[in-house]
Amino acid sequence: MTHPADDVAERAAAGFSEQFGGQASGRWAAPGRVNLIGEHTDYNEGFVLPFALPMRTVVAADRQDGEHWTVWSELSGETITFGADDVAEPGRVTGWGAYVAGVVWSLREAGHPVPGARLAIASDVPLGSGLSSSAALESAVLAALLDLGGLELAPELQPRLAQRAENVYVGAPTGIMDQSAAIRCRAGHALFLDCRDESVEHIPFDLDAAGLAVLVIDSRAPHRHADGEYAARRRSCEAGASALGVAALRDVGIDQLDAALAQLDDEETRRRVRHVVTEDQRVLDTVALLRAARVRDIGPLLTASHVSMRDDFEITVPEIDTAVEAALAAGALGARMTGGGFGGCVLALIEADRADEVAAAVTDAYAAQGLTAPTTVTVLPSPGATRLP
Image (cartoon, rainbow, N blue to C red; front, side, top):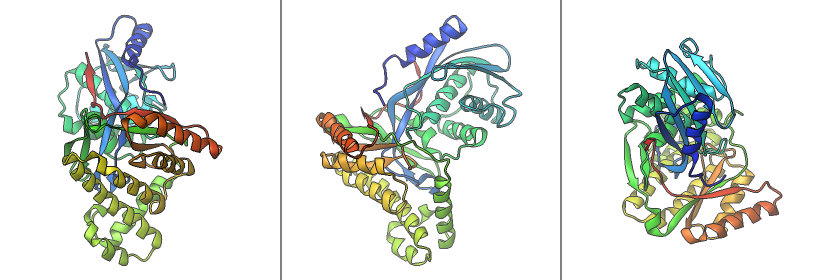
């Protein structure tokens, strides 16, 4: 993972000119995200606390006549074209193009007259690292099509529409967090999202003022949900909620946890429930500390979250655990896996002037275990989807 190049917007614009001739009428950007804390709480109708990354996907675009869309991707070098018939139902456009076609489909399903368009896409959001490159793509495309068509869609409604593109058209079972972060985050803030009613609050997360930074470590262990483990965890949570007679595990308060666990016969289900209930509480505790400008004090909550994911939810892998342990040993105030699990990234809350030292310690720990070297980047909370000047 490299730090985002300042020219990603220029690359998108240049790609547009090379592929289509002339200049795009605008450029729209949407970021990747990390979840500061709150893992696997989203589909349990609980709480999450993501923030947007400086890495972003940029779409340079212009209208074209008719109901068809032509899309060029810098990453693949491909240009694809699809028309109204192709977005009439899910599955007709596949591969990376499905994320673009899915946004067109979702807008049309919601009754919006989507303009034909030519789009050129460039991105610095790493793929397969759990930083939500797909939501960044969907959200940037959505922003472009809304502006090009002069379409009115309130910001609070946009994440659900983008999520529907991924869930229904692409067929990936993501929650609402990724698109909410890509669209609604603000610079210098984390996004406190209630996944039941989708209400948000922008929580100050001023790392600069505290002399801190977040180090994001790409474990180089591929981020995979396709092996069925994600679905298995979701089924366990649903089974636990059903056994406890609640609509979702969000309805079990931390003060009710011991009594709830005593009602469950299956040890695995008990562990899964314990993670979700305690993780929801960790999100609430983190928000309370950030509201009080006690940024440094959230470190132990981040580490406790990782321990819970490792031991109770069982979604970490050796590369992830190695990165967390090495970062903590090198002085990180807290560290945890971020994302759905089984690979992906770790985030570590660090003193801003010790980024190189912590990164080197993680790299050395990988080398000692014969693991592929990780990559790292230091990040600050960044803005959500926007039209660029």
